[in-house]
Image 1: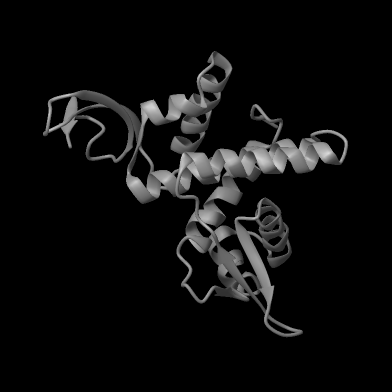
Image 2: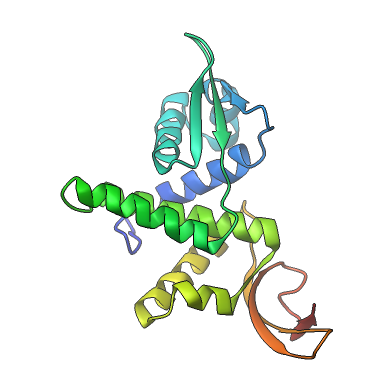
Amino acid sequence: MQMDDSRTPVKKLERLLVLYYDVFRESTDDGLYDEWKDSLFEGKFKVSKYTARRYINELIKTGRVIMEEIDEWSYTLHNKTFISLEEINDYIRIQEEKWCEKGSLTGEGRRLIHLIRLIGWLDLFLKNGMISEVEIKRFYSNKSAKRTVQRDFAFLRRIKIVPLYINRQKVISKENGLIQWFYVADEKKRHRAEMTL
């Protein structure tokens, strides 16, 4: 099986991100009740409720999806979205520290950290439509880190159900004419040479 840079099966990461996008981002403020037990997953995602539960547990481990027990027989799932690159990096740092306290960063730890980072990009692009290259370089400055970002963006572009068409774009400020570069996740804008803000 093809593996990504954190030695995680690619298809599993794709399924987790589709599940995150298609279910948890779209769920109401009241949470997603017991839908993981019914035909939603078998019909829409072509997975059994047992496989869905395993995937949900992976997302719960990241701390971005929270399962709360309502009573003995039912649960509600709540999703917490990332709102900034700083929050993503702080969260990853805390998770890395937790894993290292246990002895070392295991394969499971690396997988979940990669998943958290991908969820973070997904949240930011879906919320803002674009991310400043200057902001990205604040957190990903060396060559290895830049390659990681490019691999993440390529990974997200591959997932067809998630509407991300990430493209590096020149943006000209209407106020002062300054040129900035952004990563834009909008199919309508990806073919333009430049845009203005």
